[in-house]
Length: 373
Image 1 (spheres, rainbow, N blue to C red):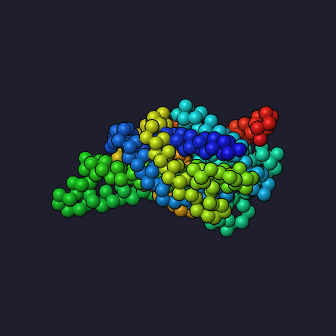
Image 2 (cartoon, rainbow, N blue to C red):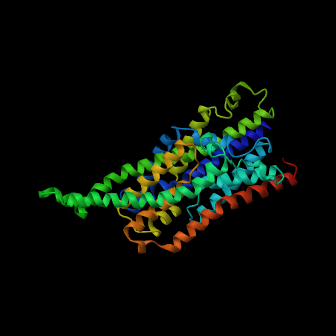
Image 3 (cartoon, rainbow, N blue to C red):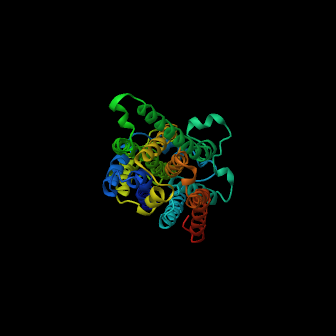
């Protein structure tokens, strides 16, 4: 059993690494598309800020660790967690191969739901649905922690992208009315030069927000695995050099420091490896971007992610940045959006949770067939 626990932890770190390179595009697509930074420098910036963001909060991790599966109905064994991870990993790789910016967050959540249902023999009570509005503040419930943010965050990204873009244009229009040489600052050459610098800051903010929200999801998976393993006695009589595996967490207790540090470093390493297919889709195919548009999209998306992480909501980085780019493009010119590309992205969003859930469900059923559960 101890060997299986270690295998699950390694699989979780593989997921974190894939999450890093799969979602690198979310942090840097716009800054690369506007040619403010080269892809290499942009990846390095994103990796560093991912690391910093991952070290500054665990509310989302607590949601994943103890707020989605009902442990009174389903035993969250290492096999269940492993199947959940495999479902998320397989779907992430499929969408990465196709160049679709689907959500790693929802792939992981879908994997957990599918594996949990299979383990509970299709008892839907295995999932914590949450009928209480107050549960949103308790890191519990698919309704308030997953489905409501899944719908509202793309809408918020789209609207905030429009609002920020309109606000920036209003400021530029005000500058253009200033007397003397100051109105020159509103000319396109000066605007592009200013936002070329400002976009480095917004890209850093986006990288921080990505790490702050996304890295925590794998922290929660590892914590869940260790809590479940300890409950069934799998961590009894550990040798001294493995004593750190005792979770020291459960319910609302903090995530162990070694889990936070490990996930932060692995996600940063994954980010550093890049994800060029998705960068091309987000940064070039949806709408043509200039530095001011990239600044508006990144600032809008990062703000949504940071607020969601504060409340323990595992919001999709992909959804927020994609819709922010759409909002900025819509504000620029509704006809500039390429709706064929957007339609493919939306279908990837819709399919992610059920597809990853189905994969994890089938893998656990296969495990059961071979007596591995």
